[in-house]
Length: 285
Image (cartoon, rainbow, N blue to C red; front, side, top):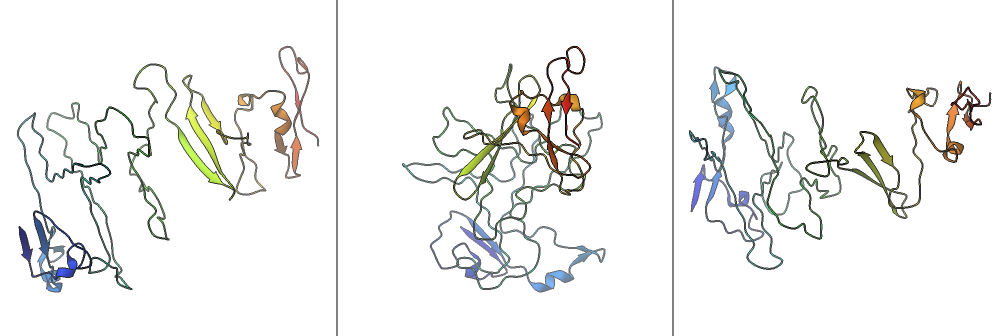
């Protein structure tokens, strides 16, 4: 079943006559240029929502949720593909093979608006998720399994994989534990770099005792941890100094820059050299 408004051209449909498309229900709309003249109070556009397909739902039940739009896809054969939803936005006016040039403007792959008004009795146990990625499985696949995957299609790549506006949140991210309950380290932040010959993997993780571990090249030969300032005339401040704990062997790699005169090696004195229970650290002038 197909419903068209405004007689949109066939090239707008997925495929654009370049490949076949089959859908049980389709809706298309052509928005004319004179829609600009329809205004509310002379300022606000009269047409706020102009969509090919619209879904609206309301519920008074505490059990049955209201779902505006639902898409379900199922695999019925080995090596098949199932897409619960697939959205495409373009800055050009055709489907299939892209034209040479597009139009300037705003392009949104998906916009999700969460609108809230406080209940008369106040908030009592309300939780809100802009996007909630969940599922059900009894085993993890042997390949990739990502809750969120930012693809790198084309040659340009994204400027920002994830961006937050000023004032958008109190915390950028909350990273949970690896286990649902009991003693557990945090989930790992995994950084990957390369020297052109091979990849290096660095991990950042909170230990079960609350300390933070930074592990350069965790899966290979030991690499150093570098803390530096973007301006070489300024120093990196570490506070408190007593918080630096390292084995005697590792202190050979501890360097400090005094008055901008270059890196100097820190030497560790013998036991009790700075009083009972303390060692002295010395740096050449």
